[in-house]
Amino acid sequence: MGAEAGDPSSVLSLAAAFSYGVASMAMVFVNKAILMQYVHSMTLLTLQQIATALLIHFGQVLGLSKRKDFNLITAKKLLPVSIFYNANVGFALASLKGVNIPMYIAIKRITPLAVLVSGCVRGKGKPPAQVTLSVICTAAGVLIAALGDFSFDLYGYCMALTSVFFQTMYLILVEKSGAEDGLSSVDLMFYNSVLSLPFLFFLIIATGEFPHSLAVLSAKTASLSFSVILVISLVMGIVLNFTMFWCTIVNSALTTTIVGVLKGVGSTTLGFVLLGGVEVHALNVIGLVINTFGGVWYSYAKYRQKKKATWKIQPDVESHAHK
Image 1 (cartoon, one colour):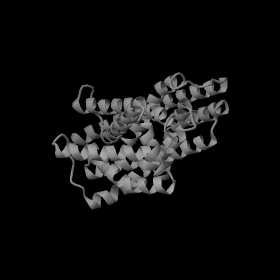
Image 2 (cartoon, helix red, strand yellow):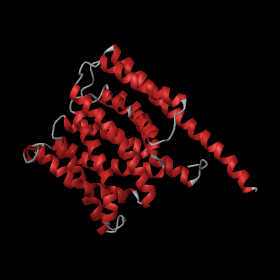
Image 3 (tube, one colour):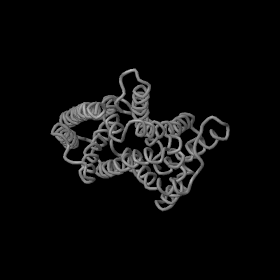
Image 4 (cartoon, one colour):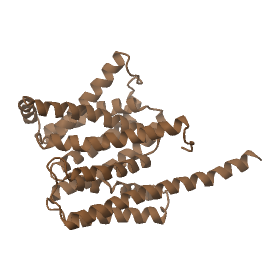
């Protein structure tokens, strides 16, 4: 980014990162709250995508938002983004059914490890020692915390780890797509929602959720408290999508990952006391502390790495300018 403090682009980058952090933290608790009452996670995701597509469409009709016209060539290019996005959210929602919030966040903090591995595979070279050690620290914290997790759920853990893989893939693809095609956050959201729906309709039918999930939903909406949580979930789904795409386009896939790690510190603390609390074990707490420390260390190491790269480039630019 290379913008100085107070520069409009610097303010925009900070606003995008902060918005994504707040929305991402809130969404974990909203999803956990609704899944405690309504277990059909794929139907919930389908409703969130329908709400997103309708909101953007009517927003354009009413002149409240702007987006580019739907283009089949762009849609074809963005199809992998949509598949990875829905796979990430689908597996994440499935894991939240059995995994408590602190452990869910700890597992999701392994995303930087996946980002680093994918970077090495794509020929980005060996990461600095501090980055490698912080990622190892984060992963070790998850293992220690899992040993002390009274509510250990193997299925939930597997779902969360699978979600990490898909999250890494779609973040890399979003960064590439936004930069190459000049797409805005609203454009990416609309394409993602429209392309998601056939895939999600197939899944809710294939898994047997539909039509039973709709009958359960209809009965549940008689409760005012459930209806309020459902509406908040649909709205937050839209807000999270927008801020995630915005942060990744304005900053980078790496910045979005770092923000996700940092917001997890607050989410982990709140997760011990909200929505029924968590049964505490010494190993679980020690593991989560190590995991959180690794996450913060990773963010600091990446910040230092980026600063170093900026200072290396600057003298080169100046020397070329005087030639």
